[in-house]
Length: 401
Image 1 (cartoon, rainbow, N blue to C red):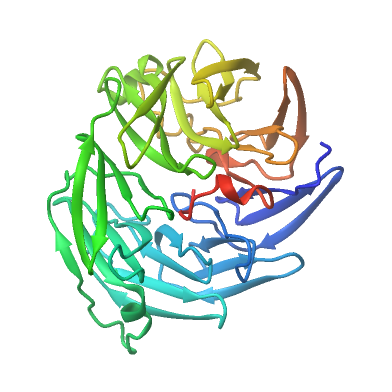
Image 2: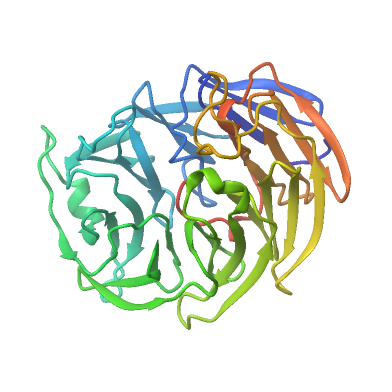
């Protein structure tokens, strides 16, 4: 591995984060359990830190900088996290954790400049989160995406920062015209448009004088729906993988996958068909995307030429020792072990693709068709999480992944 950009690898089930740089491996964060669903958040240039994640056991936002790591208290279990355009303020919502039913309504707002945090209560559930500029005033606004029933709620960031002690209830302006199955949020800082993935399509909203306003639904360009969204900073478009095919989770080897890129303002879209199987999160860099697809016939890494909307390369990679089984939910473990999958990231400096082998403690580095392997002293159960710690700020959105 030869790159000026360090690679972070988190084993969120073992409570450790490694920094990998050329031949060196070091523990950069110990005894911190990264909240898997919220993931890593790369902070914008000029922010009081380079990256952040929620420690889902210790109850803290962990912020990493060039040579230090610090912790600020938050409510857990963490579900989503997002920052404002400056990277100074990070909002963390709470979710189910190890519980089967929604039970917590706490939201934390962290000020990275003062290492302080406040907490307040909203609607119980698993709210998604972005911080969007108000179209009328330009003021940063916390936008919560609620499920079952679906709703969009807007809370001024300044109001949230001013809440007092004892976790008071805070309510904002609510729009309830949102499908109940929302999962996946994106926000374009340039336009302030918020996009939410639902079964109806990419549902778009703007905050106007403190009130959420629906601005139309863009149907998915192919059969199915997306679950994870990312903002491609080089184009300002929403990107995702639309999953189609059989509804049964046990039929995951037959799931269809299509990479889509959608202009949030015009609704224009591009679609790139991918091989069938389990495609989890994906990675972005300028003009490219990378996806790993798990399948009983063999796993692959796919490189997408986003500028020309086509697959530019498919590279087979070694199969995991304990992959998900056909006929069972891919989220279920096998033989008493945790469910295994993959995490993927692109080095924005060198273009190298890193992809984990969940449960095996290995990271494959893909350069064109060449593959090398990094061994770590931790299994990376459930695939772990990867982040190139520096790089092109244009290709990241402001939501944890």
